Length: 173
Image (tube, rainbow, N blue to C red):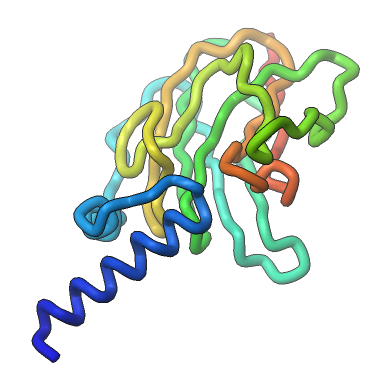
């Protein structure tokens, strides 16, 4: 087998795995680009920076989304989302009503929750804002203007919210 054949087989496997777990087919070229783009460093981000860890390999709780710090002041907030898992992920920022419990949004068609009222998202592989997902080992980011209140940060890929990928971010006056 030639080295090119090994590379092609590997990127094809990545494309098939990505399609299975995200529901979004990837071409071999996209898989190779995703694999190559994993080594990225976000630029200096404005405002208060919240680090979001996205993972799916933690034993008893296989999917998890964590935020640090979990409390910031209102205004410019930048999310720096690092995917330390093995699947593609995203971060969607949804407001939480005062009495609304974390993790209790209705699951809709496609095993996702409604993104109505979203304040924004970080789902661009090695880039800012919306995209097709953050690849394993990569980072995505978003800068938002957040008002005081409670927010639920979620991964809304099919089944990920129900599997535990959610965390609360409190924004104070």
